Image 1 (cartoon, rainbow, N blue to C red):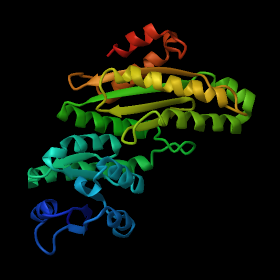
Image 2 (image 1 turned 60 degrees about the vertical axis):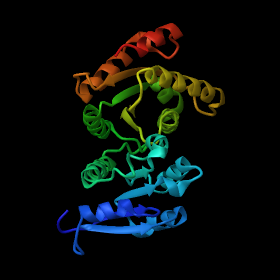
Image 3 (image 1 turned 90 degrees about the horizontal axis):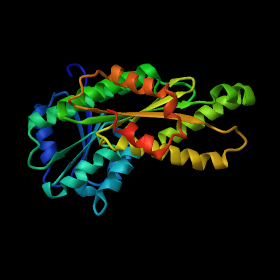
Image 4 (image 1 turned 180 degrees about the vertical axis):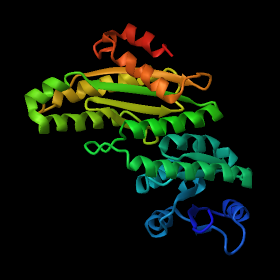
Length: 304
């Protein structure tokens, strides 16, 4: 942190436990911390652009009666800035659920010691570094992560899951009729079909998940802390949205997706590239086409 300021935007009500803990962690008037404190949601949203923070802390009590909506609003305003929420012990369930709405971690009031704060800030700084790297590793057509970016973020997510006992689900999708679309629609029309496929797959996942384009016709999505049955549920969600989408797809050609999904738990010895390769290997098998029976989908969901 030497030589530059670490910009933190803190939205907190009384009594100011988070602000006090941050100042203990970064003591002195010449510390590396540049702390901006606001006390209302409206002020927080207005301050994001002015303060240019590297991390945002949000007291969920400021978002009542709907704290999760407050998390969503902050995330929409600054999707690239790590968001850490904190709450009273009685609101722990809201804090935990905020992870699926865009927060990267949560703290509980009364337990915000310097060691805990240092841990969550390290995660935020690492995420900033990786997000900055991954911005250089995006697919120019869809804006999704390319293979290198997706693998980098997947490896980092797996490292975190190994320490916390978390889980991962990866879903891969292949445009099975890519060659025929290219022949039928030409390069521009096929590019539009790829963009629409990317949007379809991406809309099936949470904002906190990662979606990538791994090849001309292939996509992958990583769901963090997803239970094992989620692999099957996510496949079914993509299938359902594809069916609705295909009914209204005009003037572009019909889109045919082949899907494969896999589950990883903290006791799984595979690295992320090995895990991803296993899911992609399943994708290349003929029995995992989108039209396979529900019974077979059930068994595939339990493969890992």
